[in-house]
Structure formats: C-alpha cells, structure tokens
Image (cartoon, rainbow, N blue to C red):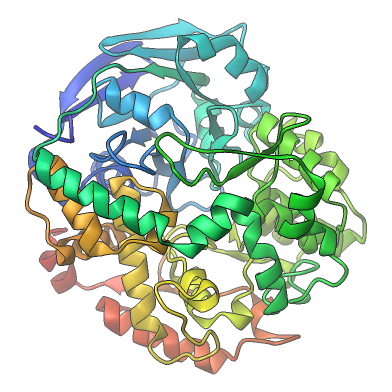
Length: 561
C-alpha cells in the first residue's frame, strides 16, 4: 500500500489495552483520510445519541495519505461529537504532530474508554505505551510540552480541558490547535493528558515520476498566488483585518455593527511596523503564516483572535489581544468562542471581562459558550451562534455566500466549512459580487465539498487560494497509485458532507437548525430573510435534500445506504 499505511491504532483506556487493526482499502479510497476517514470511523462505531462525555465515546485522530509527503501537509484531524454543539465535529490542526503519527506507521488513532488516573500516551513507531501522568495533571500546555517534548511531538490539553470547559482545545506543538467544539474537554474527561508521537517510517510513493510532476506544479502555483506570497507570508492571517473592515463586514460590538472605527492599531501594517516579526509554520510549509514577536518570543494572534478580542468587544489595544491569546494557548481555550461569549456577556451586563481569561481556563467563568449563556439570561436574540457554535469574524449580512455557508454548516457557525471569503473578498479563484444571491447556493455546495476533500487529504485550507480539484487529484493519484479524477475529489467531499449530515439528523439536529442568529435578520444592514430562505431552498435542491435531510436516493448514489 502506498501513501496510506492501512494501520489503525486502537487504545482502550478503561481496559489499558492497545491493539492494531487494518483499515479496509475500500474505505480508504472512498474517504481518503483526515476528516473523511475520521467521520466514517466514528459514524460506524458510535450512536449519534451518545453523550460526548460518556466512557464509550471515541476520540479519533487521523492523518491523510499526503501527510508528510507534500508541502502544506503537516496537519491532522480530530473527530468526535462536540460537547458544545451536539453535532459531529472535526477539528483540524497544523504543526508537526500529524506528520509524526503518519511516520510512526498509522493512518488513525482511536481513543476509547476512561483511565482511572491521569495518563499520557507514548508512541514511537511500533512502541506504544500508556504512561502515568499524575505529575502532569494540573499543568498547562506550555508546561506539559516542555516536560515531554524530548520524547516527540506533543499534543495535550491544558487546565481548561481538565475542568471540562466546553470549548477547550487540544493543543499540539505548543501553539497549534485542534480548536472549536470542545474536543479538549472530551480528552480531559478520559483523563488523557497528552499524546507524544515520534515516527521514523516515511510512507512510500506509488508513482515517483508523476509525483515529481505534480509536486512541481503545486510549488509553482503556491509561489504564483498573491494571497499566499504577498499576504499570508508577510502578514499572516492578520492581512484580512483592513479589507474586512473597509468592506464593512467586520462584526463589531457583538454583531451590533459591521464596521470598527478607531481600530487602526489592530491592522496588519501597524503590527508589522511596531513588532519585530518572525515567521514560522507547519511541517513542510513554504508560506509560514504564523507570526511571533521575536523580541519576546511570544506568539502573535491570528485574524480571528484579533477580531474576537478586538472589534467584537470594542477593544483597540493590540497588546491586550496578544496577552489574551497567550493565555488561551496556555490553558487550551478556543479564542473565537471565548471572545464571542465575553462579547455576549458584555452586552447583557454592560461590563468588560477580557481580563478574566484565567477564570475561564480554571472552569470558574463562562465555561459553556454563548448559546447556553444566552439561554441562562433569556437572551437568545443576543447570541451569535449557529447550531451552538459562535460565528467568527466575517459578517454574513454583507457576504451572502458566507451567510449560506454558515447556516448549512454541519458543525455550526464555522467559516472553514466553505471559505466563501476567498471569492467574495479576496477574489480567489475569481471575485464574485458578495451581495448578489444569484448562483450562491450551487457555489456553496461546491466549496463545501471541496473543503471536505481537502480536509481529508489532509492539506492546509490555504492551498485553495492556489489549487483546485485537478491538482489535488494528480497529487493523490501519484502518491497512492489509485486513479482519482478531478470529479472524484468533489464526489469524496460530497460523500463526507452527507454522512456528517446523516449523523446530525440521527442526533436530532435537522434542517430546522439551518438558519442564522436573529441579529442577522434585524438591525443595521440586516440580511433579507426572504432572500436567505430562497437561497436555502435552492441549496437543498442542489444537495438533493428534503428539508435539510438527504434523500434515500442520494444516500444510495453516494454508497451511504
């Protein structure tokens, strides 16, 4: 087998048992890896009605056949049922951990059960051990990483995960995160503090000559992409700040406005001028979009964090955002949900709480996210969540494609299910009118399918700025030796998206949840509900869904029934 290893490592923490299994070749071909393979393994093993914190619930860590083989492939995916949203949930993280797992000889790692006492996993090629983590329990991410990094690449939780914060992250390689949805809280409920991996067995390439040609084309396209080379390489994701604010799609003051005045000191130009920037990134990445302050050796926040702790709570002090980001990384806290929950609490109480990140991490304050906070205060009209997951920093009132993508996302208010910001703001693959609803439903379906496939390869989502399904199919075919056409890439993504929807429907989350927060349909620059509902109906027609539910014929054609 090429690209894949075909091996799955299953670890039962309750029984302290470790065993290896084979993954059928047909499943690998149809779901590839990452998000797709993780969702398939999870769906086949767990009832959609399961409590996320149940002992029988699973955490599935997955890599893809391209992991560690191509540029921008240093990623992995974690899949489970979110304690924050109740949906099936995948979290995608960069860094080096995924490459190490793949080189250790595994396509997937399944964690089940619950340890009696804190443990961590040590994986060094075929040597797998469950080790005592009593001395690590109670430590934060930076402390755990410093103690274990000599053993390999470290994925771990901070105190937020231990204390069951519903938006706790799993952090790896110190600052990379499997974020949103609270999968770190599931890891904490299993008393699993960390997973340390080191691998030395690089998977084989099937067709070396085809692979070299596909790689050469990939590198050429990456180098020729202005958003990657003139934007992300220089500024990181903060490059988005000025253009988002200029177009008045910057959610401000808990989505009560779409433009942030007086926030010039949060812009990419100000950061570049006043900080000594040092770039770094994931394994095999030529872009290195992550930035740190070289003088203090501290991580600088990405765009979503700047927005969440800046405009969304009317904060104009960039240094406060830097400090909040550092604290979130240490405790393992999702910055988007933290910022959105603080913004909602601020609107309800009229008080600012940016200085209480530690209280969130310690499980003392705002631990359950915006939706539950709104329910507590009878203020659902003030929450900005979709299916329990808070919207990020792109206002759907001025981005009709992104609006529909938010509403129909299987994991809730996420911009990465279909990054319509690319064509509606950045102009990639081409610029489309952001306020024109025509043709948006079909485009959203295509972007959702393509995103699901890219998450399954597993490649960085930013490759979409330069590549398409043709390039992805050539890479995948050359590495695995299987013949994938460009249309197969979109078909794989469609199969994954429908399987996720099937899980959610069986969990009790159906088409009635395919909507946007009340705020979006009222107030300043409100989105016309008639326009939105027309787009949604057309979207269902493209999907061949009835009221948000896949039809039997659709499921049969996708080999899901």
